[in-house]
Image 1: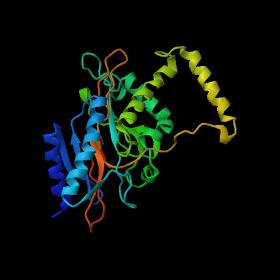
Image 2: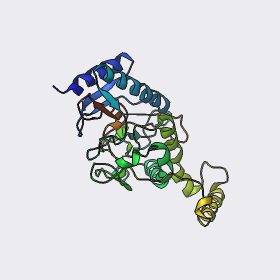
Image 3: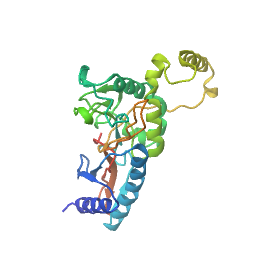
Image 4: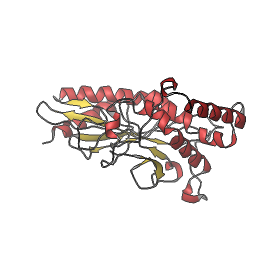
Length: 289
């Protein structure tokens, strides 16, 4: 009998007693790797649940004589744990503004611009979404981890994947974050930088408009000519792997109140005293890398 199966069952029961609506729970690709999915919510509520989820998983695992870890890559040579974050925008009426039935791929301009913002600024916010040295041991080819700053409808190697569901289920899946991050900062930085792509195109929503953007680009170009020792530190890296659906935060349309959605959280490893490590994703991730 797999000891992780019993531990995962008890984790689900404990989560439900804490008010979580668990949608699915199953074993994942790597040995000892598990995924538990809970229902989406707004960004802050989802971040709260991620933090609570970690404590519950660790406590229940300990009760079973196991050790649960949310390290992105605890075992070399097997799939790591990512925190894939599913995101979309809702307007004041609760409509998903990422969906456009008449557009190509049924994705609205808002969805495309937001995806562009995530891709454009990925090398900057990776310092927040992937904060550990171990985070980058996960972002390598061969383990279903995203390693390309690109988007796709099916391929899992790009940074952003667009799931097949449409209508209210229209969303993008940012596959780079891992469960070692601070969920409040990770959700916040993605929701802040995603919309910037549209603003960079037309200057909307920002003081100074296009002129401010031009000034910022001029400063960036000047900084590139300075000696390396004087340049500010910046996060860099590629998207990662791991499975577990992180139904990330949904941010509202610019003219709407912010709402959020999250899916599954993945990325826990369960290891017994004489057993190898495994992983137990939680409620905000989507697929193991």
